[in-house]
Length: 106
Length: 121
Image (cartoon, each protein chain N blue to C red):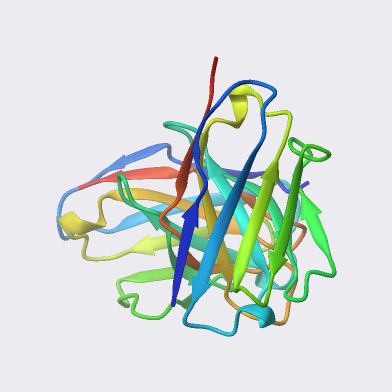
């Protein structure tokens, strides 16, 4: 089982700043099978990034993903108040699993 | 493209429940589908996955032997039959569509709105 550990638990930033969210896997994630989802309170999750760095349909280019092996990053530039949410990484290289989430407060 | 879950509610420990997920707007039988749950105030937890034609199913260890995933492609509907329910099964259950039709495991590009299950006496 691939365990994903996200850090930090909470990130408090101001509008216009840049957020950097980390996702570390307990073993190497092959073929770049990492995705990121955004979940706002009371809503279903929404896909932001798949394949480590490909943006899903309709996702602004302020959101970007990077990484390889066991270390992956979601970056959000020029933060807006609407970016306040919990962000989850997901791996689909070996079965499926999610990280514990990072809460971003703007 | 839309997913609409139903079937949630209050059930006693040891009881059973069947969730449904009605799909529309895409060719249902070409995509694997997954159930994901979220306990109150907690993160996302993978439950089960089924391939497009239903030939392969996968389960999280925590529910293996108690839950059964299935699909009826003629009705564009995904199911989750849950038995021997426990308090720790309480949460919102989401169905999710896989982004690509090519793989058993994938990112989820469409999520339903979720249905709440409460296991309590």
